Amino acid sequence: MSDDEPLQVPEQLYCVLLSLREDILLLPNSAVAEAIGQDALKSEGAGPNWLAGSLSWGDRRVPVVHFEALNGDSWPPLNKRSRLVVLHPTGGRAEDLPFAIVCQGYPHLITLSRVAIAPLPLRDSDRSEFVLSRVRIGSTEAIIPDIDRIAAVLLQARAQEAAL
Image (cartoon, rainbow, N blue to C red; front, side, top):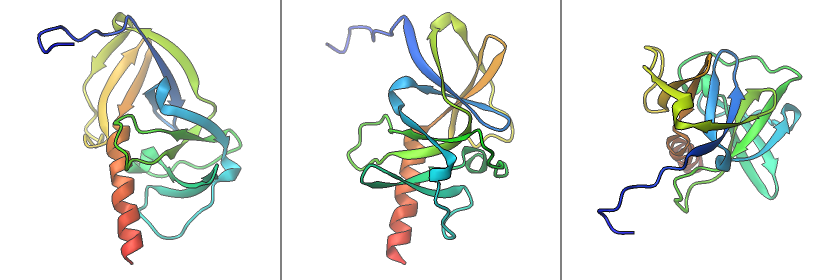
């Protein structure tokens, strides 16, 4: 493809909605690897306040993030519907590792067209380094998180932990 050819945007986007306590995350379907019950969470005392702990996934220790706390809110309580959704960063960097986000319930698959999504302004409480956008899908408001930035912050936290 040459530089003067227009970027081809697909007519349909395959996405996943993850319910949080008071928000919904909108992610590309390709970023979601698996949803696991919250009983797999192993709490760890050290680390940033948004790090819920980790889980064993295959032969890896995967960090688990409370997106609400990362975005400046408080930790949501876990309940029997809570799930840990393992994500693959989409940036394609070799150093990026999978991580999980705590959500309420199972991911919901959705197919969207460009006309189904309307941009919304960020809220004053949103941390723009982790929230790419807010959008309206029908009557639902959703957050598009920057999962590559979250992965980068997790790498920094892991490096700081290893240095101690």
